[in-house]
Image: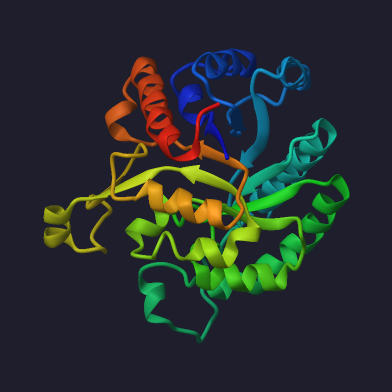
Length: 292
């Protein structure tokens, strides 16, 4: 396994250009970059970073609601996704980390108690398959993998093992798999370790992010009032057992990127704090996935 990080948090604090991000990453001992949508897709800069080889670029990320009921919005997102697939294919970048989309409308005459809180993911499955079948075919032609992230906080239905089974069965392609982020499983009260064995061959990417559950706040507000009862943390600052998780990944044969997705509020108020959070996360994870 190789240590990397997602670029979004650095861009948010002003480190925008890919070459600058890559130089910083290499200097800190990172091996891979997961390049988010806020980094300009300037081909020359990507080629320069890849040619230098100080860090690899193993994935591009583009997560949007591809099933938006605003057809113009949905089409624009799909076109941007296809641009990134073509870009990755041309440059030999292995994969795109993405979302599925979710239809937020209700079918007339259908009621589900869950819809009072959140649109039921399974109800978007047919539309998702219909929308993504040609995208998968295009990705196959470009030799680019599609890794569906499991974050519920975006237009997304790939949020649980129940949904992963359906998605992988219905989009039956060796280029379709998962971007496995255990942090989202923690606050959904899903086992973050057991699914690795079942889905190991289809895990194309791993996000290293932890989750803290604030038990006293949870007692006050429950799980529905708001999300103040949990928070994302850098690896080692939350509830996840990273020795156990990385052990499961090893047993499943995973040899890809472990990418720190830094969303820890304790390390985000300045560029210096952001850099510190990424470095602390890397140093913590090194004990479990080996040194360069």
